[in-house]
Image (cartoon, rainbow, N blue to C red; front, side, top):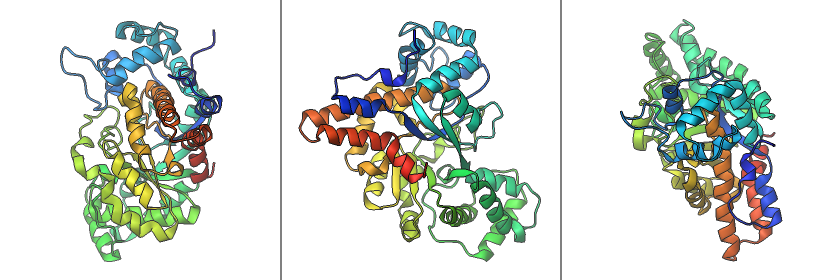
Length: 403
């Protein structure tokens, strides 16, 4: 019997053209690698929990929207009945082994290309090439700006050489990348001064930074300098610049897959993409696409920026997987205002291949509900709905990233 795939599971009758557009392979325009090794129940639960921390004593992360969806939708991919218990699911997962689990779930996501953020310095994560091979898809690298800066800071150079080496290193890594990405939201917040900092202020800040080079970058002057250096490189190479926004991202903020997970969550409202308005406006004449990742619960603000600025794009990210059965609500709110040619699919998954599969499945199911409603209400034609599904699933990403 063939393995179930995310696009075999649409929830509602749809016109043939709309169904075909939803079933078509998608571009996952932002994800991280998934673990290549087996893990304990505690370790797995931390991967599927949005906070990246253990569940409180006597509880489990399987009692979440994502946890319930894993038991419902991922279980059949591993050869189990829907709604298998958490114990049975994890036993089957261990029996198959991480490589086979990853192969089934990544391939089952129905993705034609993975754009993989390699900024999580965790050896246990699959590389872009491995993600592509197991998922039977193309794969390209997204370069994390803060990781590049960390490497430069630890190189032991004088403060006067910091800016030059950073520029050269960014240019070198961008040569093999499909996009550049920042997690400034989880370092100093997105309300930074949008202007390019002066050379003198950068040298002074670099001197302070290099006195403790292993610390995380959080100096607003150096964050601004890093972003403007990235803008220069992105403009030269025709690359988009991604920004992690919203309250998600425990593993993306520096805590890593085994950290305490709280460093990124604490920024709260400082991760609201509306705070980027000044910086986005400054980039408008330069032609550098800005992609707002994740954004939840500020996805309406992100949708507004995408509506106002011609170079701004948005995805719903891991909120689609973590809201699971509620994903249609998130997607419907994005579709209230964001232009259809500005929305892209990105799973934002990291650590557990289940999240990659769930994001694809919940995107297709959620969007199917929204499209069916619009068609039923006479707001959109069948051709409109099919075109919008195709644009969000792959067409917009292929255009923006030049795939």
